[in-house]
Amino acid sequence: MSHPHNSSDLISLVDNGPERSILARLILPDVVVDDDPLEELHGLATTAGTEVVDELTQRRGTPDHSTYLGKGKVEELRLMVERHEAHVIFFDNDLSPAQVRNLEKATHAKVIDRTELILDIFAAGARTHESRLAVELAQLEYSLPRLKRMWTHLSRQSMGVGMRGPGEKQLEVDRRLAQKRIHDLKVELEKVESRRERQVASRNEIPTISLVGYTNAGKSTLMNALTGAGVLAEDKLFATLETRTRRWHLPNWGHVLLSDTVGFIRDLPHSLVASFKSTLEETRQADLLMHVADASSPQVFEQITAVYQVLEELGIEEKDTLLVLNKIDSINGPRTLNRVLDRYPHAIPVSAKTHTGLTPLCEAVGAALAKEFLDVEIDVAHHDGKLLAYLSAKGKVESRDFHDSHVTVRVRMPAGAMGEVHRSAIRVVPTQLTIRGDGGTAEHDAVEDDTTQEPTGDQASAHSSEVA
Ligand SMILES: Nc1nc2c(ncn2[C@@H]2O[C@H](COP(=O)(O)OP(=O)(O)OP(=O)(O)O)[C@@H](O)[C@H]2O)c(=O)[nH]1
Ligand SMILES: [Mg+2]
Image (cartoon, rainbow, N blue to C red; front, side, top):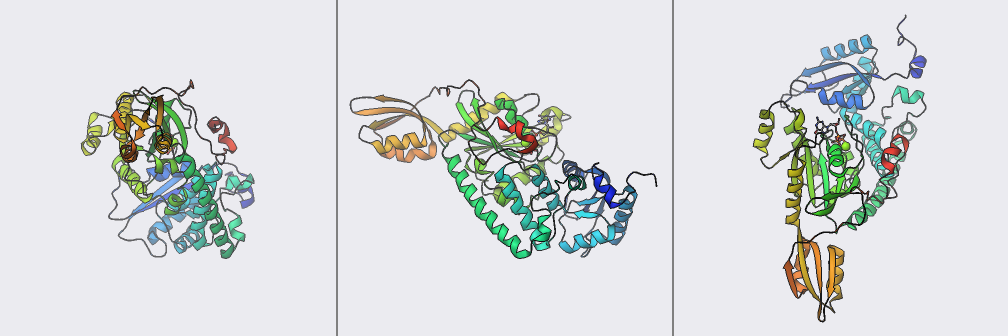
């Protein structure tokens, strides 16, 4: 037995190499797949830190009741596990607790379904108090009906830091305790949510734009290209798990706030979407969404649809949205791009990497904001303190000129707040404001002021500069 991995459990615990994983997917008849139906799962498996050693797919009318895949395929999986000494099998599908148990018994490997894998990635990447609460809640809600512990990596166990979210604790707590913890987490998250809601709302005089999109579409790269911010952008799924808001000087417009946030994925676990509500507060309150899609992906249409589905689930699909087709530098031939533009003629092609198309993008953002905000000169009676306060609260006041009978206020107002202005003002005239800068020299000042957003761990340095 010379193979280093042909060893007892004890030795494999001190083996710090990546866990070996096998990918599996059942393709049901109504599912359209391209040449590589396991590409996304492969990305998830490597993001989770495992080494993919083999893969298997099966087309079938319905899943098998007890083992999800058919008997022959389960036997194939068992042989693969044996041959590669694999630790874990990832399924691109969601499995019932009984199916997981039966598959684990038949293959002698850990079986992780798609939801659990995504939860694991979020748990490993969560850096802030807020996102940790959200992930722990989602993991507990997933594991409660199963009363199982979440998957932990061998390497992490051996390093003594194997706990992700509820992790080992889950084994010890009974159902009642888990329910109590879920209750407490919900209460805590509600507090965080309402604090965040107030905080984001307090910046409402500055137009806010939120980047949304499928994971790995290039949102963070675009944020960096537009604002010069140094947010983390990586070729891995869910590189961003928290919201970062930066000041962005939009040419011919002035300062706006740009938020980069967590990416979406198809079949994103519902519990996760719900618990990420506070992390997505900037997106919920944004004046405009920039939906970034990877135009070079063969799955671009499915990904765009998946993003709209998650937005709908969050109740924010009604917003003004600009579709941005990113990565046009890596599209082979204009036909692929035209195929997307045929379906989405108003989309804006860019490359965040080579900075192509950023000028038309800025123009489109300015035009979209112009529909939402008005630059106006308003004459207000001296005694109308209420209206003066309203203008300061809702708009961005540029100047006040005091005259004998009235005050002339030059202000940028959200279109939706103009009703009250027209009711009380002496006179309202549209103007073209010259928006002044904010005094700062850097165009990418961070605006985050949330004390709960304390980065910890190995990404601390990447994030610390953003807490203002
Ligand atoms: N070729 C090409 N690659 C790009 C472009 N924009 C981003 N990328 C690459 O795509 C990968 C993902 O980029 P990110 O900016 O991290 O994507 P994201 O949407 O923020 O991803 P998550 O935060 O993980 O959801 C990185 O490897 C980038 O270098 C582009 O315009 N062209
Ligand atoms: Mg990102």
